Length: 281
Image 1 (cartoon, rainbow, N blue to C red):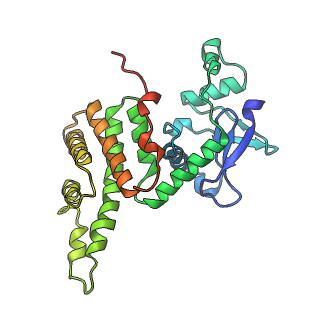
Image 2: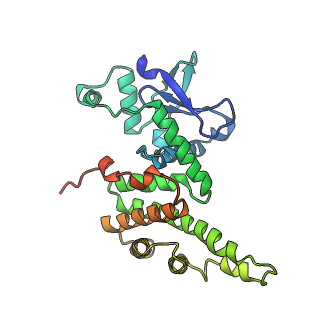
């Protein structure tokens, strides 16, 4: 019964009194409020919560529909799930909670990964502050990119990390270029021209931001490598390698650091390789 126990809740921006509930075995639960009853919206919200943990320095992997289960909170103390989710982590939790896991599966409990509730709360607070500071960034894409990188799925990693890179670039462009162009009296059509993605492509924007010294030379080099690999993936179906995915990850971290230079963001130093699959060769 201890594994079913609710150990606390985390404020994830839901209307009071709702929280993200945390169980002793690491299970997470959200309330079935109207805005979360659509399964895709529920998965997106869970991933946004997990992205906050990731930014705050706690490695998490993205979930898909197979990681979503339904259940009940009993006496405000226990969470019981129906056990219908198909994802491997959900199956493991169900078997262990019901004490029906085989010895091969139960051996995972010999040295389980352990985190304190306060550690999760602080990571979530920090992650949410970062996402609120840069509202253009979709936390789910960052999480999926980091998950793909840890799983050595370089295409998934590059595609999702590049989305976040473009979102961070848009933020820098808006705050450092467009905002400075808003002079009085305004020049007719200037702002609209600067917002034109066809003229000011992401590569051109990186060049301008680099010349304005808002992007370092190492980051600019990584961005060029990642952009070329991403274009080959999108237009030719050519799968990227580890170097391309690492370039995207390094560039993303540089951009985020340049946007928030005075903030200590644990994600910038998080070793994703330590949480990933090893190279079989």
